[in-house]
Length: 173
Image (tube, rainbow, N blue to C red; front, side):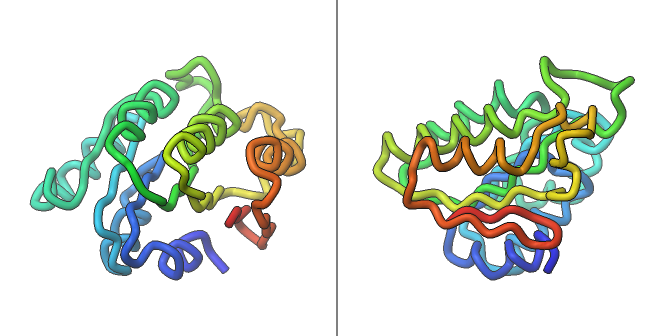
């Protein structure tokens, strides 16, 4: 199951917050699946521009795009959300020579921000974390983070989360 298949099954009637817009596939899947609103962050200028051009007719009514580091932008997005949301977390540097951020893979900080927000508003957000196979503790562009690091971070905020590790992604419900 791809993260997009998982996303399509969970996002209907919900808000999507995506870190790592890429080519805009997550945005498109969310819109096609009935997401009410989509917020997406992309650090790479070219990818951001491509997504902006692709979805400009839906900005700002349905889609809001942000250009920059997810760790810096996510707090502003979270201020706009007052109910449960689906988070597709896929922010990472593709090429270590193009590091734009304080970290190559901000996943642990993103999880912290999202789950703190959930506690604050009394909502249990859904987390979909893409690229599971690269969280093997040996991938430099993923800050050598392991799947167990991600699970521990989630469960340290809320031990009631059910975490599934699929072929491509980690899902916390």
